[in-house]
Image (tube, rainbow, N blue to C red; front, side):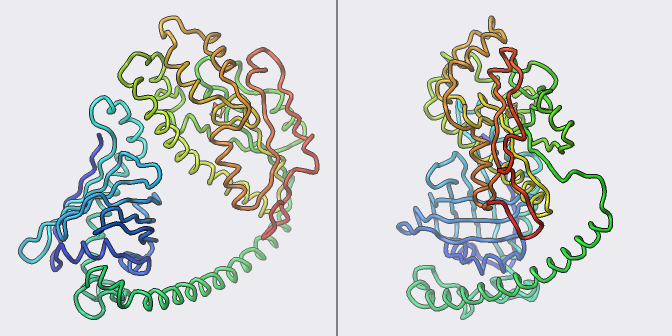
Length: 448
Ligand code: SF4
Protein backbone atom coordinates (compact mmCIF):
# COMPACT_ATOMS: atom_id res chain seq x y z
CA UNK A 1 0.00 0.00 0.00
CA UNK A 2 1.33 3.40 -0.98
CA UNK A 3 0.28 6.55 0.90
CA UNK A 4 0.96 10.11 -0.17
CA UNK A 5 0.00 12.52 2.56
CA UNK A 6 0.02 16.32 2.84
CA UNK A 7 -1.01 18.51 5.76
CA UNK A 8 -1.78 22.17 5.54
CA UNK A 9 -3.37 24.74 7.85
CA UNK A 10 -5.44 27.37 6.01
CA UNK A 11 -6.52 30.52 7.80
CA UNK A 12 -9.85 32.22 7.23
CA UNK A 13 -11.93 29.29 6.06
CA UNK A 14 -14.03 26.56 7.67
CA UNK A 15 -14.22 22.88 6.86
CA UNK A 16 -17.89 23.15 5.83
CA UNK A 17 -17.08 25.71 3.13
CA UNK A 18 -14.50 23.41 1.55
CA UNK A 19 -16.82 20.43 1.95
CA UNK A 20 -19.75 22.18 0.23
CA UNK A 21 -17.59 23.51 -2.57
CA UNK A 22 -15.99 20.16 -3.36
CA UNK A 23 -19.26 18.28 -3.45
CA UNK A 24 -21.06 20.77 -5.64
CA UNK A 25 -18.48 22.00 -8.10
CA UNK A 26 -18.82 23.48 -11.58
CA UNK A 27 -16.04 23.53 -14.13
CA UNK A 28 -16.09 27.35 -14.10
CA UNK A 29 -15.62 27.63 -10.33
CA UNK A 30 -12.97 24.94 -10.43
CA UNK A 31 -11.03 26.78 -13.14
CA UNK A 32 -11.27 30.07 -11.20
CA UNK A 33 -9.91 28.32 -8.15
CA UNK A 34 -6.54 27.75 -9.91
CA UNK A 35 -6.55 28.98 -13.51
CA UNK A 36 -4.46 26.94 -15.92
CA UNK A 37 -3.94 24.11 -13.41
CA UNK A 38 -7.51 23.14 -12.61
CA UNK A 39 -9.27 22.23 -15.83
CA UNK A 40 -12.50 20.41 -15.01
CA UNK A 41 -14.44 19.21 -11.99
CA UNK A 42 -18.10 18.37 -12.25
CA UNK A 43 -20.61 15.76 -11.16
CA UNK A 44 -21.54 13.02 -13.62
CA UNK A 45 -24.05 11.31 -11.36
CA UNK A 46 -25.65 12.01 -8.02
CA UNK A 47 -26.07 9.51 -5.20
CA UNK A 48 -28.00 9.62 -1.96
CA UNK A 49 -26.71 12.30 0.46
CA UNK A 50 -23.59 12.50 -1.70
CA UNK A 51 -22.66 8.84 -1.20
CA UNK A 52 -22.26 7.47 -4.72
CA UNK A 53 -21.81 10.92 -6.32
CA UNK A 54 -19.57 10.45 -9.36
CA UNK A 55 -17.18 13.24 -10.34
CA UNK A 56 -14.96 13.82 -13.32
CA UNK A 57 -11.78 15.71 -12.55
CA UNK A 58 -9.06 17.00 -14.86
CA UNK A 59 -6.07 18.96 -13.55
CA UNK A 60 -2.31 19.23 -13.63
CA UNK A 61 -0.28 17.87 -10.73
CA UNK A 62 3.19 19.24 -11.44
CA UNK A 63 3.86 18.43 -15.08
CA UNK A 64 1.44 15.53 -15.18
CA UNK A 65 -2.11 15.91 -16.39
CA UNK A 66 -4.40 13.81 -14.22
CA UNK A 67 -7.86 12.91 -15.44
CA UNK A 68 -9.94 10.67 -13.27
CA UNK A 69 -13.42 9.67 -12.31
CA UNK A 70 -14.01 9.46 -8.57
CA UNK A 71 -16.93 7.99 -6.65
CA UNK A 72 -17.73 9.39 -3.21
CA UNK A 73 -17.58 6.58 -0.65
CA UNK A 74 -17.75 8.41 2.68
CA UNK A 75 -18.81 11.86 3.81
CA UNK A 76 -19.00 13.65 7.13
CA UNK A 77 -20.05 17.24 6.57
CA UNK A 78 -17.22 19.68 7.20
CA UNK A 79 -14.92 16.87 8.35
CA UNK A 80 -14.20 14.21 5.81
CA UNK A 81 -14.71 13.11 2.20
CA UNK A 82 -13.40 9.87 0.68
CA UNK A 83 -13.40 9.31 -3.08
CA UNK A 84 -12.59 5.99 -4.72
CA UNK A 85 -10.92 6.26 -8.10
CA UNK A 86 -12.63 4.65 -11.11
CA UNK A 87 -16.24 4.37 -12.02
CA UNK A 88 -16.75 1.26 -14.15
CA UNK A 89 -13.48 -0.36 -13.14
CA UNK A 90 -12.97 0.49 -9.51
CA UNK A 91 -9.29 0.79 -8.72
CA UNK A 92 -7.73 0.27 -5.28
CA UNK A 93 -6.93 3.98 -5.07
CA UNK A 94 -8.61 6.32 -2.58
CA UNK A 95 -8.36 10.02 -2.03
CA UNK A 96 -9.27 11.28 1.44
CA UNK A 97 -9.66 14.86 2.59
CA UNK A 98 -9.94 15.37 6.35
CA UNK A 99 -10.84 18.78 7.75
CA UNK A 100 -10.55 19.91 11.37
CA UNK A 101 -11.70 23.41 12.29
CA UNK A 102 -9.20 25.17 14.54
CA UNK A 103 -8.93 28.76 15.83
CA UNK A 104 -9.11 31.00 12.79
CA UNK A 105 -8.93 28.31 10.14
CA UNK A 106 -8.95 24.68 9.21
CA UNK A 107 -6.32 21.94 9.42
CA UNK A 108 -6.43 19.77 6.31
CA UNK A 109 -4.99 16.36 5.67
CA UNK A 110 -5.00 15.21 2.05
CA UNK A 111 -4.14 11.55 1.50
CA UNK A 112 -3.88 9.30 -1.54
CA UNK A 113 -3.74 5.59 -0.76
CA UNK A 114 -3.04 3.14 -3.56
CA UNK A 115 -2.68 -0.63 -3.56
CA UNK A 116 -3.85 -3.63 -1.60
CA UNK A 117 -3.26 -4.89 1.91
CA UNK A 118 -1.81 -8.32 2.69
CA UNK A 119 -0.42 -10.44 -0.14
CA UNK A 120 -1.75 -7.92 -2.65
CA UNK A 121 1.24 -5.79 -1.66
CA UNK A 122 3.18 -7.67 -4.31
CA UNK A 123 1.47 -5.29 -6.75
CA UNK A 124 2.86 -2.18 -5.06
CA UNK A 125 5.62 -1.79 -7.69
CA UNK A 126 2.87 -1.35 -10.30
CA UNK A 127 1.37 1.52 -8.34
CA UNK A 128 4.80 2.98 -7.64
CA UNK A 129 5.33 3.41 -11.34
CA UNK A 130 2.45 5.85 -11.38
CA UNK A 131 2.69 7.29 -7.86
CA UNK A 132 6.41 7.97 -8.18
CA UNK A 133 8.45 10.02 -5.63
CA UNK A 134 8.30 12.92 -8.08
CA UNK A 135 4.50 12.64 -8.24
CA UNK A 136 4.37 12.55 -4.42
CA UNK A 137 6.47 15.74 -4.18
CA UNK A 138 4.34 17.46 -6.83
CA UNK A 139 1.14 16.34 -5.09
CA UNK A 140 2.35 17.72 -1.77
CA UNK A 141 3.17 21.09 -3.29
CA UNK A 142 -0.11 21.07 -5.17
CA UNK A 143 -2.17 20.46 -2.02
CA UNK A 144 -0.29 23.14 -0.07
CA UNK A 145 -0.90 25.65 -2.83
CA UNK A 146 -4.46 24.92 -3.82
CA UNK A 147 -6.28 25.20 -0.49
CA UNK A 148 -5.11 28.75 0.34
CA UNK A 149 -6.23 29.61 -3.21
CA UNK A 150 -9.63 28.09 -2.48
CA UNK A 151 -9.88 30.27 0.66
CA UNK A 152 -9.09 33.33 -1.51
CA UNK A 153 -11.70 32.34 -4.04
CA UNK A 154 -14.40 31.66 -1.49
CA UNK A 155 -13.70 34.87 0.41
CA UNK A 156 -13.53 36.89 -2.82
CA UNK A 157 -10.07 38.11 -1.77
CA UNK A 158 -8.07 40.17 -4.28
CA UNK A 159 -5.39 37.46 -4.22
CA UNK A 160 -7.76 35.36 -6.29
CA UNK A 161 -6.43 37.28 -9.25
CA UNK A 162 -9.04 37.92 -11.85
CA UNK A 163 -11.25 35.35 -10.22
CA UNK A 164 -14.73 36.49 -9.42
CA UNK A 165 -16.50 34.71 -6.60
CA UNK A 166 -18.13 31.49 -7.59
CA UNK A 167 -21.70 32.04 -8.73
CA UNK A 168 -22.80 29.71 -5.98
CA UNK A 169 -21.49 31.95 -3.16
CA UNK A 170 -21.97 35.40 -4.54
CA UNK A 171 -24.88 36.13 -2.22
CA UNK A 172 -23.29 35.31 1.10
CA UNK A 173 -22.02 32.01 2.49
CA UNK A 174 -22.09 29.13 0.13
CA UNK A 175 -25.31 27.20 0.48
CA UNK A 176 -25.52 23.46 0.37
CA UNK A 177 -25.55 21.90 -3.07
CA UNK A 178 -29.09 20.62 -2.82
CA UNK A 179 -30.56 24.04 -1.94
CA UNK A 180 -28.73 25.65 -4.78
CA UNK A 181 -29.76 23.06 -7.32
CA UNK A 182 -33.39 23.90 -6.66
CA UNK A 183 -32.96 27.65 -7.03
CA UNK A 184 -30.25 29.14 -9.14
CA UNK A 185 -28.46 26.22 -10.70
CA UNK A 186 -30.19 26.04 -14.04
CA UNK A 187 -29.93 29.80 -14.67
CA UNK A 188 -26.30 30.07 -13.62
CA UNK A 189 -25.39 26.93 -15.56
CA UNK A 190 -26.99 28.30 -18.73
CA UNK A 191 -25.18 31.63 -18.45
CA UNK A 192 -21.87 30.02 -17.57
CA UNK A 193 -22.24 27.60 -20.51
CA UNK A 194 -22.80 30.61 -22.75
CA UNK A 195 -19.74 32.41 -21.32
CA UNK A 196 -17.62 29.31 -21.69
CA UNK A 197 -18.64 28.88 -25.33
CA UNK A 198 -17.98 32.54 -26.08
CA UNK A 199 -14.55 32.61 -24.44
CA UNK A 200 -13.69 29.35 -26.19
CA UNK A 201 -14.59 30.95 -29.56
CA UNK A 202 -12.42 34.01 -28.83
CA UNK A 203 -9.46 31.82 -27.84
CA UNK A 204 -9.95 29.63 -30.90
CA UNK A 205 -9.99 32.59 -33.29
CA UNK A 206 -6.89 34.16 -31.71
CA UNK A 207 -5.16 30.83 -31.83
CA UNK A 208 -6.10 30.23 -35.51
CA UNK A 209 -4.85 33.68 -36.48
CA UNK A 210 -1.46 33.32 -34.83
CA UNK A 211 -1.14 29.73 -36.10
CA UNK A 212 -1.75 30.79 -39.68
CA UNK A 213 0.86 33.60 -39.37
CA UNK A 214 3.39 31.16 -37.95
CA UNK A 215 2.57 28.61 -40.63
CA UNK A 216 3.11 31.06 -43.47
CA UNK A 217 6.46 32.08 -42.02
CA UNK A 218 7.48 28.44 -41.50
CA UNK A 219 6.50 27.55 -45.08
CA UNK A 220 8.46 30.50 -46.47
CA UNK A 221 11.57 29.56 -44.52
CA UNK A 222 11.26 25.88 -45.33
CA UNK A 223 11.12 26.69 -49.06
CA UNK A 224 14.23 28.87 -48.78
CA UNK A 225 16.09 26.22 -46.78
CA UNK A 226 15.18 23.32 -49.08
CA UNK A 227 17.63 20.43 -48.42
CA UNK A 228 18.16 16.77 -49.18
CA UNK A 229 15.58 15.23 -46.84
CA UNK A 230 13.36 12.58 -48.37
CA UNK A 231 10.24 13.68 -46.48
CA UNK A 232 9.20 10.07 -46.02
CA UNK A 233 9.14 8.27 -42.69
CA UNK A 234 8.07 4.94 -41.34
CA UNK A 235 7.11 4.33 -37.71
CA UNK A 236 8.75 1.15 -36.44
CA UNK A 237 8.11 -0.90 -33.33
CA UNK A 238 11.04 -0.30 -31.02
CA UNK A 239 12.53 -3.80 -31.28
CA UNK A 240 12.77 -3.70 -35.06
CA UNK A 241 15.70 -1.36 -34.49
CA UNK A 242 16.74 -2.70 -31.12
CA UNK A 243 15.92 -6.31 -30.20
CA UNK A 244 17.42 -5.80 -26.75
CA UNK A 245 13.99 -4.90 -25.42
CA UNK A 246 12.36 -8.21 -26.44
CA UNK A 247 11.17 -10.60 -23.72
CA UNK A 248 13.97 -12.87 -22.48
CA UNK A 249 14.26 -15.60 -25.11
CA UNK A 250 12.66 -13.60 -27.91
CA UNK A 251 15.63 -11.77 -29.45
CA UNK A 252 17.48 -13.25 -32.41
CA UNK A 253 19.91 -10.48 -33.41
CA UNK A 254 20.58 -6.77 -33.05
CA UNK A 255 17.83 -5.47 -35.31
CA UNK A 256 15.52 -6.64 -38.11
CA UNK A 257 18.02 -6.09 -40.88
CA UNK A 258 15.64 -6.66 -43.82
CA UNK A 259 13.41 -3.76 -42.76
CA UNK A 260 16.31 -1.46 -41.87
CA UNK A 261 17.93 -2.14 -45.25
CA UNK A 262 14.75 -1.23 -47.13
CA UNK A 263 14.71 2.10 -45.31
CA UNK A 264 18.39 2.76 -45.97
CA UNK A 265 18.06 1.89 -49.67
CA UNK A 266 14.97 4.06 -50.16
CA UNK A 267 16.25 6.86 -47.91
CA UNK A 268 13.23 6.62 -45.68
CA UNK A 269 13.50 8.05 -42.15
CA UNK A 270 13.00 5.48 -39.38
CA UNK A 271 11.01 6.69 -36.39
CA UNK A 272 11.44 4.34 -33.47
CA UNK A 273 8.29 4.09 -31.36
CA UNK A 274 8.73 3.49 -27.62
CA UNK A 275 8.77 -0.13 -26.45
CA UNK A 276 5.46 -0.34 -24.56
CA UNK A 277 6.47 -3.27 -22.38
CA UNK A 278 9.76 -1.66 -21.44
CA UNK A 279 7.88 1.44 -20.28
CA UNK A 280 5.03 -0.35 -18.51
CA UNK A 281 6.74 -3.46 -17.23
CA UNK A 282 9.87 -2.40 -15.46
CA UNK A 283 12.51 -1.51 -18.00
CA UNK A 284 14.61 -3.44 -20.48
CA UNK A 285 14.41 -6.72 -18.54
CA UNK A 286 10.66 -6.30 -17.89
CA UNK A 287 11.17 -7.33 -14.29
CA UNK A 288 7.51 -6.89 -13.35
CA UNK A 289 6.58 -9.41 -16.03
CA UNK A 290 9.29 -11.79 -14.82
CA UNK A 291 7.67 -11.73 -11.36
CA UNK A 292 4.77 -13.70 -12.87
CA UNK A 293 6.99 -16.57 -14.02
CA UNK A 294 6.45 -19.71 -11.94
CA UNK A 295 3.97 -18.09 -9.53
CA UNK A 296 1.50 -21.00 -9.72
CA UNK A 297 0.71 -22.32 -6.26
CA UNK A 298 1.30 -18.98 -4.55
CA UNK A 299 -1.55 -17.03 -2.87
CA UNK A 300 -1.21 -14.43 -5.63
CA UNK A 301 -1.98 -17.04 -8.27
CA UNK A 302 -5.28 -17.78 -6.57
CA UNK A 303 -6.14 -14.10 -7.00
CA UNK A 304 -5.45 -14.22 -10.73
CA UNK A 305 -9.05 -13.58 -11.75
CA UNK A 306 -8.76 -10.20 -9.99
CA UNK A 307 -5.10 -9.70 -10.78
CA UNK A 308 -5.25 -10.13 -14.55
CA UNK A 309 -7.97 -7.49 -15.24
CA UNK A 310 -6.01 -5.12 -12.99
CA UNK A 311 -2.78 -5.75 -14.86
CA UNK A 312 -4.56 -5.26 -18.19
CA UNK A 313 -6.27 -2.04 -16.98
CA UNK A 314 -2.93 -0.62 -15.78
CA UNK A 315 -1.23 -1.62 -19.04
CA UNK A 316 -3.96 -0.02 -21.15
CA UNK A 317 -3.63 3.18 -19.12
CA UNK A 318 0.13 3.43 -19.71
CA UNK A 319 -0.22 2.42 -23.39
CA UNK A 320 -2.94 4.98 -24.03
CA UNK A 321 -0.59 7.76 -22.96
CA UNK A 322 2.19 6.44 -25.19
CA UNK A 323 -0.19 5.94 -28.10
CA UNK A 324 -1.41 9.53 -27.77
CA UNK A 325 2.14 10.82 -28.05
CA UNK A 326 2.90 8.60 -31.04
CA UNK A 327 -0.32 9.62 -32.82
CA UNK A 328 0.57 13.25 -32.18
CA UNK A 329 3.97 12.69 -33.76
CA UNK A 330 2.40 11.03 -36.81
CA UNK A 331 -0.01 13.96 -37.10
CA UNK A 332 2.92 16.36 -36.88
CA UNK A 333 4.68 14.71 -39.84
CA UNK A 334 1.50 14.76 -41.88
CA UNK A 335 0.69 18.35 -40.96
CA UNK A 336 4.21 19.27 -42.03
CA UNK A 337 3.65 17.79 -45.50
CA UNK A 338 5.61 14.53 -45.03
CA UNK A 339 4.59 11.04 -46.11
CA UNK A 340 4.08 8.43 -43.42
CA UNK A 341 4.67 5.13 -45.20
CA UNK A 342 3.17 3.14 -42.38
CA UNK A 343 3.45 1.75 -38.89
CA UNK A 344 5.25 -1.57 -38.55
CA UNK A 345 4.25 -3.70 -35.56
CA UNK A 346 5.27 -7.17 -34.39
CA UNK A 347 2.90 -10.07 -34.94
CA UNK A 348 2.99 -12.42 -31.98
CA UNK A 349 3.41 -9.63 -29.44
CA UNK A 350 0.64 -9.02 -26.89
CA UNK A 351 1.47 -5.31 -27.18
CA UNK A 352 2.57 -4.60 -30.75
CA UNK A 353 0.76 -7.35 -32.65
CA UNK A 354 -1.13 -6.20 -35.74
CA UNK A 355 -2.81 -9.37 -37.04
CA UNK A 356 -1.64 -11.86 -34.41
CA UNK A 357 -1.37 -11.41 -30.69
CA UNK A 358 -1.36 -13.59 -27.57
CA UNK A 359 -4.29 -14.87 -25.59
CA UNK A 360 -3.60 -12.97 -22.37
CA UNK A 361 -5.40 -15.30 -20.00
CA UNK A 362 -3.77 -18.43 -21.37
CA UNK A 363 -0.36 -16.75 -21.54
CA UNK A 364 -0.71 -15.66 -17.91
CA UNK A 365 -1.46 -19.25 -16.84
CA UNK A 366 1.38 -20.60 -18.98
CA UNK A 367 3.90 -18.17 -17.51
CA UNK A 368 2.70 -18.88 -13.99
CA UNK A 369 3.20 -22.60 -14.62
CA UNK A 370 6.77 -22.48 -15.95
CA UNK A 371 9.44 -24.21 -13.96
CA UNK A 372 11.84 -21.34 -13.39
CA UNK A 373 14.68 -23.78 -12.72
CA UNK A 374 14.50 -25.42 -16.14
CA UNK A 375 13.01 -22.74 -18.41
CA UNK A 376 14.95 -22.10 -21.63
CA UNK A 377 14.51 -19.70 -24.54
CA UNK A 378 13.11 -22.56 -26.62
CA UNK A 379 10.48 -23.45 -24.02
CA UNK A 380 9.58 -19.79 -23.67
CA UNK A 381 9.08 -19.42 -27.40
CA UNK A 382 6.99 -22.61 -27.47
CA UNK A 383 4.66 -20.90 -24.95
CA UNK A 384 4.39 -17.90 -27.26
CA UNK A 385 3.53 -20.13 -30.25
CA UNK A 386 0.93 -22.05 -28.24
CA UNK A 387 -0.90 -18.95 -27.13
CA UNK A 388 -0.99 -17.17 -30.45
CA UNK A 389 -4.42 -15.90 -31.57
CA UNK A 390 -5.75 -13.67 -34.32
CA UNK A 391 -6.07 -10.05 -33.19
CA UNK A 392 -4.09 -6.95 -32.39
CA UNK A 393 -1.98 -6.14 -29.35
CA UNK A 394 -2.88 -3.64 -26.64
CA UNK A 395 -0.56 -0.89 -27.85
CA UNK A 396 -1.65 -1.32 -31.47
CA UNK A 397 -5.28 -1.07 -30.35
CA UNK A 398 -4.54 2.12 -28.44
CA UNK A 399 -2.59 3.65 -31.33
CA UNK A 400 -5.32 2.82 -33.86
CA UNK A 401 -7.88 4.40 -31.56
CA UNK A 402 -5.83 7.60 -31.17
CA UNK A 403 -5.32 7.83 -34.94
CA UNK A 404 -9.03 7.26 -35.52
CA UNK A 405 -9.85 10.12 -33.18
CA UNK A 406 -7.61 12.37 -35.27
CA UNK A 407 -9.10 10.98 -38.50
CA UNK A 408 -5.68 9.79 -39.67
CA UNK A 409 -5.33 6.66 -41.76
CA UNK A 410 -1.91 5.02 -42.10
CA UNK A 411 -1.25 1.45 -43.15
CA UNK A 412 -0.30 -1.00 -40.40
CA UNK A 413 2.20 -3.69 -41.42
CA UNK A 414 3.50 -6.56 -39.33
CA UNK A 415 6.86 -8.19 -38.88
CA UNK A 416 6.34 -11.85 -37.95
CA UNK A 417 8.09 -12.64 -34.66
CA UNK A 418 7.41 -16.37 -34.89
CA UNK A 419 8.89 -16.52 -38.40
CA UNK A 420 11.97 -14.67 -37.19
CA UNK A 421 12.38 -17.07 -34.26
CA UNK A 422 12.36 -19.89 -36.81
CA UNK A 423 15.12 -18.24 -38.82
CA UNK A 424 12.97 -16.76 -41.60
CA UNK A 425 13.68 -13.38 -43.15
CA UNK A 426 11.16 -10.64 -42.55
CA UNK A 427 8.51 -10.55 -45.26
CA UNK A 428 7.60 -6.92 -44.59
CA UNK A 429 7.52 -4.96 -47.84
CA UNK A 430 7.32 -1.31 -46.89
CA UNK A 431 6.45 -0.16 -50.36
CA UNK A 432 3.70 -2.65 -51.02
CA UNK A 433 1.60 -0.07 -49.11
CA UNK A 434 2.05 2.09 -52.24
CA UNK A 435 -0.73 4.58 -52.57
CA UNK A 436 -2.06 3.72 -49.15
CA UNK A 437 0.72 5.53 -47.34
CA UNK A 438 -0.54 8.75 -45.74
CA UNK A 439 0.74 11.95 -47.24
CA UNK A 440 0.30 15.29 -45.58
CA UNK A 441 0.20 18.47 -47.59
CA UNK A 442 0.84 20.75 -44.68
CA UNK A 443 -1.74 22.16 -42.34
CA UNK A 444 -4.58 21.47 -41.95
CA UNK A 445 -4.63 18.44 -44.23
CA UNK A 446 -4.78 14.93 -42.83
CA UNK A 447 -4.89 11.49 -44.40
CA UNK A 448 -8.26 9.75 -44.86
S1 SF4 B 1 7.11 -6.20 -29.67
FE1 SF4 B 1 6.66 -4.19 -28.83
S2 SF4 B 1 6.59 -4.54 -26.62
FE2 SF4 B 1 7.62 -6.29 -27.51
S3 SF4 B 1 9.77 -5.76 -27.43
FE3 SF4 B 1 9.04 -5.14 -29.42
S4 SF4 B 1 8.50 -3.02 -29.15
FE4 SF4 B 1 8.66 -3.87 -27.11
